Image 1 (cartoon, one colour):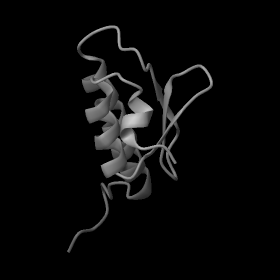
Image 2 (tube, one colour):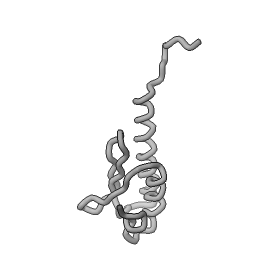
Image 3 (spheres, one colour):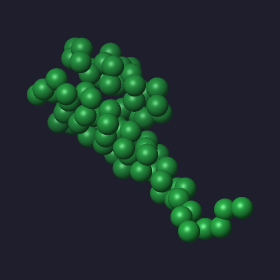
Image 4 (tube, helix red, strand yellow):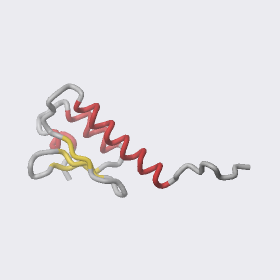
Length: 86
C-alpha cells in the first residue's frame, strides 16, 4: 500500500486531504488515469482530481467524504420520526 507522500506524487496540496482521509478510515489509491479514489466499506467510492484546478478543490473533496459518511450514518440509523419516545 502506498503512503500519503507517494499518493500525493509531489502535489503538496493533496497531502493534507490524503492524510485526513486515511485517518478517517478511507482507503486511498490512484486510478489508471491518475485521479484519486477514496474507498470505505459500505460507502460508494469517491473520485477527485489529482491536479486541482482551484484552491477550493481540497476543501470540496473533504466535504464529499463527510457527506458520504453522514449519508451512510443516516441510512444505517434513520430518524425515528413519529415513533413513540418515552
